[in-house]
Length: 291
DNA sequence: CATTTCACCTGGTGGC
DNA sequence: TGCCACCAGGTGAAAT
Image 1 (tube, rainbow, N blue to C red):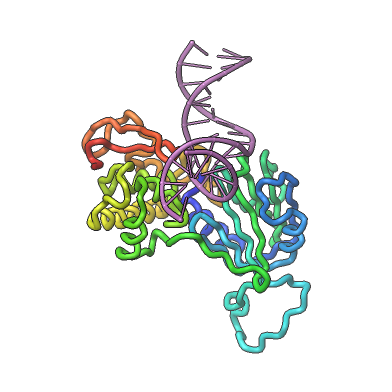
Image 2: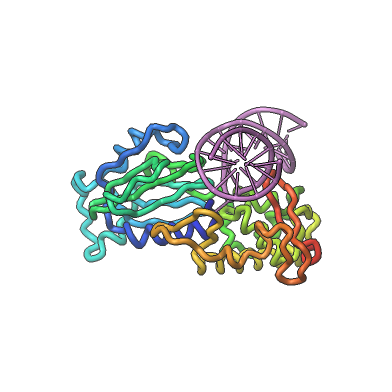
């Protein structure tokens, strides 16, 4: 379900709600799929840890965690006042939502919906839940010092500059849509925002990356950033059941120009939107506005 | 090596 | 109502 704007919305929401909170006990169901770290290890490792911050990188949500409270802290004479904020994390919990994953902060006695794979009791009395019907999501625990800190595989689409962006695609030889979906190039763009970005840039999805001009690539970079930023402002796209940490839907789906608008008139020129299959994904574009 | 296809899952929708 | 084919926000492994 979630691409960069949805993941950003969820990460911000979760951050606001659970920062400075603490994990108590964790329950993980035994289905093997969503757990990169074995469930028992993960539950044990998370228990007692302070949540310093929650943020997004690419399509991943990263929880920066402090040590368990019951482990006596090695002084830290400096820091003085805002110890909690300045404290550097010594572990991370990395959540990838896959297609249908959700992270919810709930009341402990709110009904447990089907496909709830993780329940994390919080010191504040609430619960953080991970729900994922298709089980494409992934949960991973990293102990910093033993494991390396998480780094997104590709460049950050919101901040990448013109040169780096052009270089990234110019040396490839595949359809631009396929390149946009490759997380090792850009981290965070998925099927919706690839289609919407290409529409705004006026580029056909099948155009090969190495045949795009520098001008076209720059148009694409700007278009992608505008689309992603506007989507973040609107809380993401709720295509079917996407909801943020509060259970609220986003509104960017109302702004879609091509995604899942097959046969409907183009918002700019009234030509019916086409749907093709590319890189194994449904791909939507306007044959007149996009060249 | 780069690029493409497919498998991994469950659920919703629309046609018959 | 039931059955079935098809579609879905993602990704990594296997095939080409």
